Amino acid sequence: DIQMTQSPSSLSASVRDRVTITCRASQSISKSLNWYQQKPGKAPKLLIYAASSLRSGVPARFSGSGSETDFTFTITNLQPEDFATYYCQQSYSSPPTFGGGTMLEIK
Amino acid sequence: EVQLVQSGAEVKKPGESLKISCKGSEYTFTDYWIGWVRQTPGKGLEWIGIVFPGDAITRYSPSFQGQVTISADKSISTAYLQWRSLKVSDTAVYYCARHVAYSRSSWYKDVWGNGTTVIVSS
Image 1: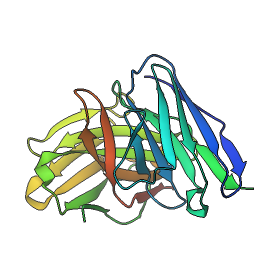
Image 2: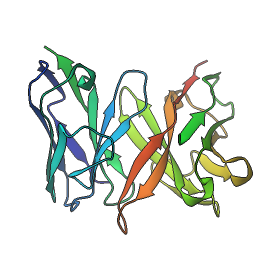
Image 3: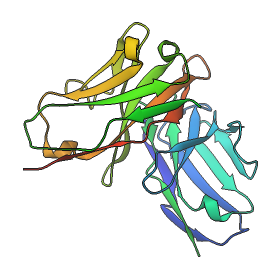
């Protein structure tokens, strides 16, 4: 299985800050990388697919980039509703695998 | 609104059987793969497998192959995840999710169920 390593595992930030999360794949996955947001007690929600494509309806303050093994996820102008846990997930090969998550907390 | 609604929480004993469900609405159920994802504090999110309700084809993660059975009843737009003999280690939250292919071999999960908590304890 392809291993996905996210960093940091947790992050403290303030409203209006810019934050970046990284995700590294154990082998090349081209651009087959998705990002999800999960709030406590809720299911994950898709934010970005194909490394940098913003899902319809998702605010433009969310963005993603990268290819092959190294990817980044950025939130600019953090809003109160953005404090959650974020996961990367590769869909290049089966089984799809998730990163360990990054918990974004209010400073 | 496209929705996946899952069955309620379960508390079971080791060795018991269980079948949880995921009912789709407001879309053509037979046009999309439906998959299951397990979430635990220790191992995070793990993909279990998928079923294509149109023809009942299934695919499993090697980690879950033989441990669970995924199925679907297209007549009632419902997918299932089933265990013959539960273990304490099956304790988790289980999510169903609609899988969408955005390229020849790449997928995302665009609609998720509300989650089913399964607790296995003696």
